[in-house]
Length: 147
Image 1 (cartoon, rainbow, N blue to C red):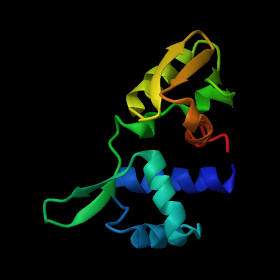
Image 2: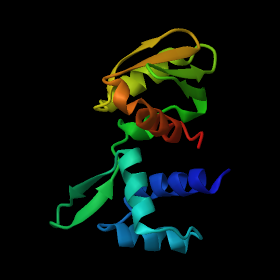
Image 3: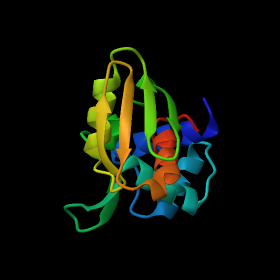
Image 4: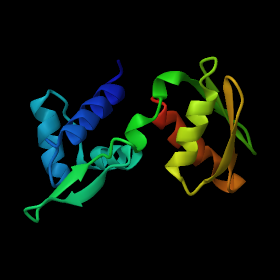
């Protein structure tokens, strides 16, 4: 497993377990305790990609959390490739998995995604604008853990 995938997997586990922290520095420390040294800016990008949000606890303190029905359920293991050109993005999936991937992509409510069309093993991602297509493709590649 790549260092990026391992870091995100560990961060995801920390957030789901509630053992994360209230600051990105605390998350960096928690990752370091598990042998993963990283920077605050990398954690910030990972938190955004994972869909983590800062929530208030009953005691009034804050904690970064993931909701189990949110982006944490993205079926990255189903995605084989993400390709794009000047006008569209194509997500190739395992046979029969495109509908599930399409539903998750729609559920992201990403501002650059207008919609998706899913077949059996391919999802067509329709961008809101072609100006940001490469940036959106990079987000999908990271989300699918292909980077």
